[in-house]
Image 1 (cartoon, rainbow, N blue to C red):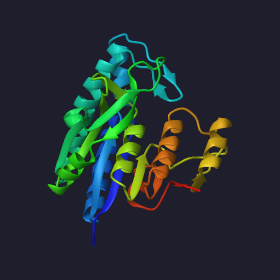
Image 2: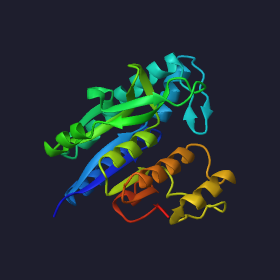
Image 3: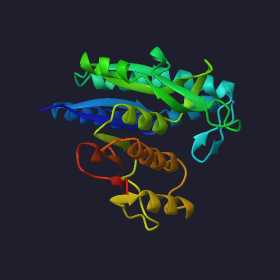
Image 4: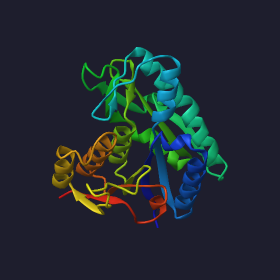
Length: 252
């Protein structure tokens, strides 16, 4: 039986918690034992905010995306490709997984273009070098990808990890794209988990302010992945990663 292609995006805020990282690494090991080919894309939000605060660089968000000037971009490069990536790689290696930490810059794995002038060095993926990723997987590596990416103009861009995960899942025609966060999935206004959502329902909840902040790019990235051929996309927590739990998005 061929391995199921599973792209997993894990949030940077969660990766600051050592117990979460251990639980996450153990869950990924379980996925491997089930004959799943896993590609991990990670964020680095809290660690980046802490570094920016230490450097007295102000932080501002627009629709869940961090406005990124050149100093913020360079700090993101340090945190995402350095501290966060290597901590996660080390945790996975402790579970006998051949994790290999790279970024979208390495081998021009992910190309990006700026979203708009207001966000400055914030990019959106335009191309994924799928053959490079498949080659790593074929050699038995577990790619752990930091979302900083190489611009079509040669500049380095801070790219939202949700967007990178969606682009990679689409490029690989993944069977499943999972966004792992600190909540069980998308919640309604009363805090109740919504097990399934269509695009129309999701956009209505965004307009109503029920889905807000950092959940917006996750939801839209999940829907975009479905539109580009990913078989299934969901948002869940680390407990739901190895179970059929969370909010699953429907392409209808």
